[in-house]
Every structure is written in structure tokens, then in C-alpha cells.
Length: 582
Image (tube, rainbow, N blue to C red):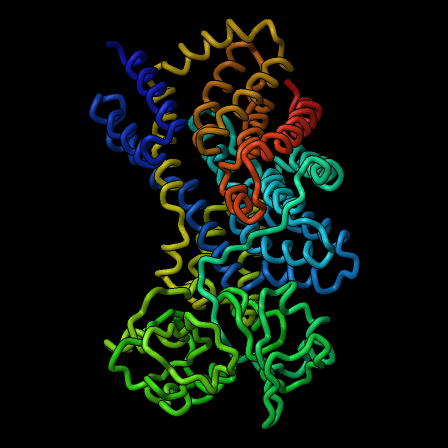
């Protein structure tokens, strides 16, 4: 069997496995790479070159820099500021969707959706708008924003990195904006005015995988809560926190009424999910006195961990309050909150510890590791912490990398790798968190498929396949070819990953364009836009995040996503030939 036939057989087998996901996509990609080497179609040097490419390094660095921004609370702060300052809820929702599209032009779509989901759900509750009419638009807005810059999605970067192997120049940082901005603007208009009419009216089910805790939070000077009633504060409606008691001086008010006035210095006993409690410390101007006292006592910073630990039989904490057991002095750690199976309407400071209680503990990693056998760590929640003090440095590093790489002052790969190195040096993120932030399956997929692209060209398989395709598509003309390639790419992105779909279609599009005498650039742009816009099914990670909370059905995505796909298709076909002539 000649090399071309072997490669085409491997290509079809990989396509089937990518679509069915019988094996994880990264495993399929590694299997494909192994077959190429074992069958002599690629040398080891050629096969492994993708793992050291600047595309892979850029992707990994951007994953880490996105985590740095999340840890600093930058994205959450933007959403909370918009929600807090706008008085018109409908206007706020539209501003939030526009902000989501803008933020996702530079960061991960999935991370942006995850951070804005509780904010958008809270605003929709306040406006009396069913959450199902805003959560799907939230996911779609994050996807639309990804078409504006080369770092907007990993798909854009993958396409850009694969182009030099086909003799094409990489995508410019803002090159996609010529079509991405019109697509995003028209797409947002569709989400504002058409999508709500097509979506069902269902309330959100915001299930939090993290258990509900009781925490004591003190209202600090300058807090936006000062002078508001509990009803006006929106602690329950917008922030997912239930105030079970308020301590003022020596007096404690249990189950305070909605018209209870909040004052500076009040200590609120609140119950809610871990993430909501942590977020409130950053956005509501409330502090944990336990955490502050520990910092004053030890002055420690750096590798601060956040863990859940369960109290075991024989613990010296049993039957005592945390103050009585001198927890802070004994362990050098602070307890931010406590979870107990049965409901408690006490302040945290007055609760006596029982067997099975779960403590939310914060402190130095080495002290967490020395908790002993009577406090067993259930899980590490460090990535859920937000530290606004790091926000200026995080923004400066990320913005600096975007400016230097975007305007070609230094190569983008260099800019983001240096930004990661500085983030680690400044302790904005730990090495463990940095490695954990990288989506390794995507890295493996991209590296392997870059090698497959090399084999596709070197064996002559690309010429054979594109020659056959050209004979079928030549009568369509350039517009028909662009439309056909766009439609096929959109179809492929539904069952398989966007990156895989783009890498499968890219050599076919370039080869077909060259065979028919067209400039490959408009077809490259069309495939990139098509691969990044996956709306028809909920299989895109951003869509999966809202699928459950919005109580959507599969057909809801088909009904709304098909219309948005049509909008994207029409805008792309109108804009691309004018900016990148055939």
C-alpha cells in the first residue's frame, strides 16, 4: 500500500474517532502520531517537532495567564462593577453580554462564562427575567468574542501555528477583527432581540458542587453594604448568601428582618457556597476577622492554600468553639467557615465543633500539610481564592504581553512566556497551579495534529485529496467554495473539537484554493471563523456550563444556535471577500 493511501486511511480513521469520541481526542491524536512514526511516514524529529513549537508554548502560556487573571479576581471585578453600578437591569444584562464578548477576545471562553454565570443569573433574578433567557446568550457571547483576536480561542492560535507548514504566513494578532467584530456585533444584536423570543422561560438551577458553609464576615469601612437594608443589599438575591444572624457590639440578632439596617462593624453570620463566600470578601467590602488576625500574628504570605478538612474522632477541637480551642495559635491557620449537615442558625464563633464538621481552612501550605490525623484534608480549593491586591500586577503583565505581542514588538510566544515567568517570580501563581491551569489534552492534540499536517503535505496526500475535492467544487466559484468549506467546518465542529475540525479542514482548503487558482487567505479565515463558532449543539464547553443551570434541552440549542450560525455565516460571506479578495 502506497504512503498516500495509508495516510488517507489514517485520516478517515482519525476523523471517525474524533467525531465519536470512542477514545479521548488526545489519545486518538497520540495514536495517530504513533502510527505515522511506526509506518515510516514521519521521522521522530518531525513527529515531535510540534511539542516544541511556538504555537504550543503560546497556548500553554495563555492558559496560565488566564488563571492568573482569575486568581486576581480581575474578571469577576469587571462583572460585579457593572452589575453594581447600573440601575436598569435589562441594560445591565446587555452590557454584561457585551463585556463578556470583549473579555473573551483575550481570555478563555470557558473561564469567562464560568466567572460571569453567577453575576448574570443574579441580575436576571433582580430583573424578573427567567435565567434560561440569558444564560445561553452568555455562553454564545463568550464564543462570539473569541473571533476578534488570534488569542481569542485556542482554535485561532492552532490555525495560525499550522499555517507556516503550508507556506502561509501566520494570522496577525488583530487580523481576524476585520470579520470578527462584525460577526460579534451582529451576533450580539441577535442575542439581544431575537434569542429571548426563541428561548423557554425557566428559572435557573445553580447547583454548586461545593458544600454550603457558615461564615462570620465583618462589614469594613467603605463597604457598599453600609447604610443599606438586607433587602437592598441583595445578599441573598444577587450573591447567594443567607444572613442567619448579625452581631453588633455585644448584641446578636438572629434571623434579622429584611429591613434590618447594615452598619460598619457589623458581623454577619452568612450561609452559602464556598465560592460565594470568597467572592463576597472581594466585592462587598467584608472581611474575615480570623484571617486578619492570623496575618497580623504571623505576617505570612506567599503560598497560601485553601482547603476543606473534616474533623475526626479524638480531635482536641471537639466540644469547643474555635476560640476556646485556640485553633489559630495551635495550627497557625485560620478557619474561614464551617459546614455541618444539620442547619445551624448560630454565629460561627459560638458553634462547638463536632465530629464530621468540615472546616474551610486557609494558611501556609506547609502548615496545612501538618494538620495531623484528627483533621483530614478532603480537597484543595486554592484556585477558588481571589486576591484583588494582585490585580494590578496581573493586568499589567497580561496587558503588556498583549501589546508587545499584538503589535509585533516581540513575537507573541516570547511575550506570553516572559509574562508567565514574571507571574511565577512575583508569586501571582504557584508552579503547581500553573501546571494545573494548562489544558494538556488540547496541547497534545495540537502538537500531534501539527505533525499530521506535515505528513499530509510531504506524502502528497494533500494533493490527491484536494485534487478530488477541486473537481467537485470548481463549478461553485469562489463564493460557493467559501460557503461550502464554511458549512462543512461548522458541521464538523458539532461532533468533534473545534481545534481538530480546523486542523482537518485547513490543508484541504489551502490545497483546493491553490488548485483552482484562488488566494488561500479568504478560505483560511472562513475556516477559522467557522471552527470557532459552535452554536448548534451544547457540546462546546461554554455551552455545557449553562446547559444544566438554564434547564435547557438539546433542541433549545438547535433552535437558537441555528439562527446565530446563519447570522455568522451571512456576515462572514459578506465581509471576508472584501477584506481578503479571492
